[in-house]
Length: 436
Image (cartoon, rainbow, N blue to C red; front, side, top):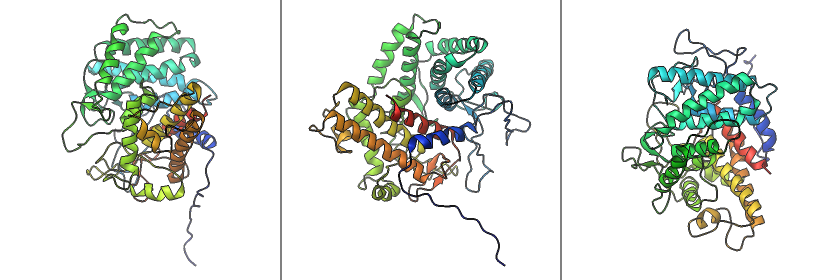
C-alpha cells in the first residue's frame, strides 16, 4: 500500500471578488499582531517574548523554511504604522488592538530615546531597540497612524497617543531637513519617500481637530518640504534619493517608492510628474523589450491579469538568501500601484477632467486612455487596470497568504511568508477601490 499523500487544489483563473478577498486578508494580517492572549517567542534572542501591540513584520526567520535565510520577527515602526492604519479602518470587534499598538509604540519610543537613537527603525518584539538603521519616515508614519485611530481609543490611551505624537514632532522639527536611510533601508541621503510622508504628517497635524497642539514651526516646514520634493524631478522622473546612488545597486531609479510616496505621503495622484515616473516603472517590468522584464508578466498578460511590479531596476535583493541574486516582483509594490490607479480614477470621476499632458501621456496610453477618452471612460479604465494588478496578486498567492515577493519567472511566492505589509497594502488598495 502506497504512502498517503495530500495535494492542494489549484485556484481557478476566474476573477476573485477583491472586496471579499480583502476580508480574509484582514484576518491573515491580524495573525501577526501580538496581544496578551497571543504571545510570540523570539526565535533568535532567547527569553524575549512579545508585548501586546507588537506587529511582526513576518513570522518567518532563517530556520523556519528551507529556502528562506532572512529573519523578520521584529517590529518595524513603518510597517507597524501601515498595519495599524488598516486595523483602524477594519472590522475589529474591540479597540484593544489599537490601544495595544499605541502603548507599544510609546514603549519602543522610550527605549529608542534611552538608546539615543529616536528614529531607530526596528525593535525586538518586546520593544527593545535592535542593532539597525535609523529612518525618519517612521515617526511621521506612526503619527499619521495614531491620528487615524485616535477616535477609537479610550481616554487614558488618547493621553498616551498625544505624548507619542508630541515626541515625534519634537524629533521631526530638527530632522525633516536632514538625510536618512531610505524606505528599503539600503541607501542614505535625502529620501523622496521620507519627505512625502513627513509633509503629509505636518499637514495632518496643522489641520487636526483632536486637541493636538500645532507647532509654530510647521508653517516653515510645510513649504520647505514641498520645495524639497520638487527638487527630486530630473525632467523624466522623480528620483528616489539625492544624491543618486552610484554603487552596485545603480541604477536606483525609477523606484517604486515614488508610488509609495503617493499612497502613504502627500504626493497627489494627479501629479503628472508622478504619473510620468509611474509609466516608466510599469514599462520596465511589463514591456518585453525592457532588460528588466519579468517573464511572469508575459504569461499573466495572456491570462488578462497583472502586471506585478518590483522595487527598482536591477534590484539584487533575492529575499531567500543573503546572496545578491535578486530582482523579483513584490506584492506591496503591485498593490501600491493598483491603489494609485484607484485613487486617480476617483479624482477624475469627481473632477470630471483627466490630467493628461505631455508628461502623463505615456502613463495613460499604457491602459488605452488618450485625448479623446471621456473622464468617465478614463476612470473605468483605471479601475480595470487596478483590478488586473490585484487579481494577479490573488492568483499568485498561496491560498490568499502573501509572502514578500513572487518569483519573476514562475510567479510562485518567495522570500518570507505572511508579510504584514503585503496584506496591509492589499487592504489599502481595496479600500481605495471602494471609496466613494
